[in-house]
Structures are given as C-alpha cells and as structure tokens.
Amino acid sequence: MMSPFTIAIDGPAAAGKGTISKAVAAHFDLAHLDTGLLYRAVGARMLQGEDPIAAAQTLAAGDLENPDLRTADVAQAASKVAVIPEVRASLLDFQRAFARRSGGAVLDGRDIGTVICPQAEVKLFVTASPEVRATRRLAELSDNGFKTDFETVLADVKARDDRDMNRADAPLRPAEDAVIIDTSDLDVEAAIAAAVAAVDARRRA
Ligand code: DC
Image (cartoon, rainbow, N blue to C red; front, side, top):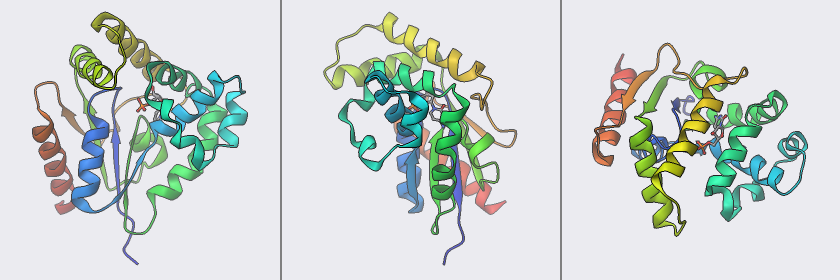
C-alpha cells in the first residue's frame, strides 16, 4: 500500500483553490475532496428548513449531488453553518479519513492545514485580492446563467471572508508552514504551475 500523502489547500472564496486543487490532484494522481461542498450541502438543507446540526449528522453522498450547491445563496448559508462547532465536528472524521486514504489525497477548504490535517505533507494557501476574486466569481456566475453585478458579488465575497476569518472555531488563516500563492496577477496556467512547483519543492525537502 502506498503511504498516505496529503496536500492541504486552503484560502478564501474564489481565489482559485478549486481549479488549482483539481489540477494538482490530476498532476500527482491523487484523490480530491472539495470540503466546501460538505458545508454547502449542510447549508442547502438548512435553507430547506432543517436544523443544520441534524443535517450535518445525517449528511449523505446524495446531498453532494444537489445541483443548487454552487449558488450564491447556498454559499452564504454554507459560511453561516460553518460557524457552528457541532457542524464542523460532524464533518471532521469523514475529512480525516479521506485525507489518509491509501494513494494520497488533495483536500481544499478553509481549515485543512490548520485543523483537519495539521500533519499534511504539503500545505498551500491560495489567495487573491477581494476585487480579483469578485471579478472571477462574477464571470463564473454569468457563465452559469446567474444574473448579478460586480458590487453584489464583491459584497458577498467580503461578507464571507469576514465570517470565515473571524469565527471562533477553525477560522480561515494560513498554517505556519503553508506556502502562500497569491493568484491576483496569475492566469490559470501560471497559478497551477506555481502550485505544482510548490508541491515538488516540498516533496524534495
Ligand atoms: O470553498 P467554498 O466556497 O465552497 O466554501 C463554502 C463555505 O463553507 C465557506 O464560506 C466556509 C465553509 N467552509 C469551511 O468553513 N471550512 C472548509 N474546510 C470549507 C468550507
């Protein structure tokens, strides 16, 4: 059995974590878990009237297939349920087990390097300015047929940053040994190349 090899990728909303994580997982042939989806699935069930703690405790694979998980409303709901310690605790074991699966894994989220996998072999913190992130998110939402504007998206990004960084339990922050990748001035290819280079450098060290 190959020894587990975990890459933790954290950062704020719309910094490019998702794209980078998928590409890094494909490059190194590792499984990938977008942990934001877990919080989004709980948030979606809260929006349907369920208690978020009960939703987190009974989360099932089918909840992750909900086509609404990418909407702005679900993103805000995810960030709200993510403040609740019982919700975070319910999702912990699944994430840790995924991280140590044989063959290795990439997990992306907010607290992977700090709380979920402090022993991860490689930690990246992917960030960008709020304006750049809002511009990218606006383009993504427009591509998916959602009508909105820059100011609304920027306000959403900042509200989520504020909630994610200032909560008491597992706030968003770089692990001490994380490599910071600021994608503000990088295109997709350059951002992926920077991440792959950072992983290679850590693996050699
Ligand atoms: O990565 P995302 O935008 O899909 O995440 C949605 C929300 O879920 C995010 O605003 C905060 C929460 N989240 C978290 O608290 N911890 C994680 N590891 C991943 C996401």
